[in-house]
Length: 283
Image 1: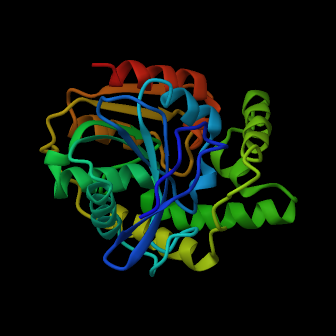
Image 2: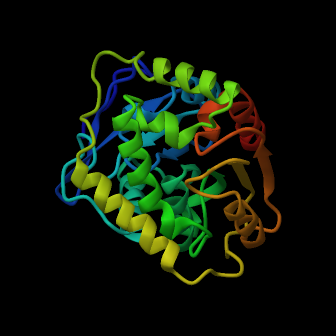
Image 3: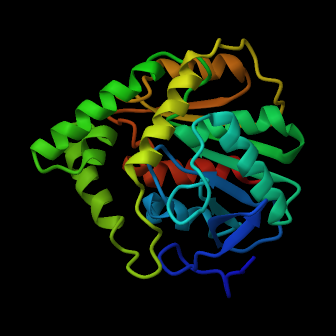
């Protein structure tokens, strides 16, 4: 396992690897602090460069933040997983290989589904849980995500528009402005970028989300730690009804719905989201 030389900002921090059972997982480690580190899991079809610097850097001001890649995605080796539960098993193994016995989890979209599977498989590993733009097993609209995503990507190709602009943001003036700013921020990191996501990875992860959506919903989660749920009121990939079901699974959760926000709720509201997250994580 190679280690980063020093903590740095998102655009400067190295991308080391950690070996788990013959598979090399890429990750990024930034920020400092002796408290519980924050492990972040990204969305469908994303690599480590898909994180918004304006969402990561504020979180790393007063704690260690670790961004973990998925098996077979980006520069991580191995065969990509097509089930949320297998992704969770990988993440648990990576967290433990990094020498961590207790973490906070930030799950974004599909990453939030993986985070939910982690607290089922290894509840002793997680202290606090943040779910952004995510949904529970059997959540409304999750089985329709594949069709919606493919149609939107084709529309983006036909109109020369980045698909994430159409998938993540509202088409209001505020949403369009936020999309342009987000796309510009993703280009800040120039050196040491992660490898692009392949169509095979994208298809496998779509299958994983579809299978998650087909599962029978559970009434309540056994996790007893603090939970923060954040969702956009206009999310078309993971409809807002999923936030309601998550709130039912975690009755003591703090739920925040952001207006005029789509699936990219974290990117569109990075200031408010990071402030809420830092407050939530503060012991």
